[in-house]
Length: 171
Image 1 (cartoon, rainbow, N blue to C red):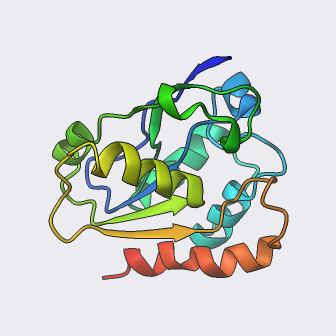
Image 2: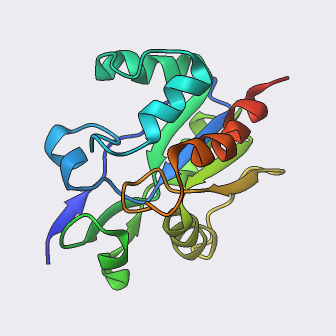
């Protein structure tokens, strides 16, 4: 099996929302960019929500997220997975990212949005059950995966559900 490792988180110190994926797919790993697959809906959705051009260079898209109070990361730090599909992650190979340190450095994060069910399941299994102390009152919401593998839901339908991210940033 192929050993893969996620990227560092992207977050400003004052982040209020954390968007969590599972672990980058092959195209993202090749490009060293979150959500690099051209058919992934993440950047088009965030661009619509935050009013920026989805064709901006990657560093500028990251700055748009950070400037809006959104942090971006993955649940899994390292695992074995052939290909890009989450269903192929070898469960016994999963090492979670260091969420205790993340929350210590980003005390303003009050909401986690999971980019799909696998991210939520992995978080519950490897972080919550792993005994990591989470901030009091932390809200967690699963959103539909932006992955092109989640083709049963149109982008517009995903966008409507992802509006919850924008709603959570309002005072």
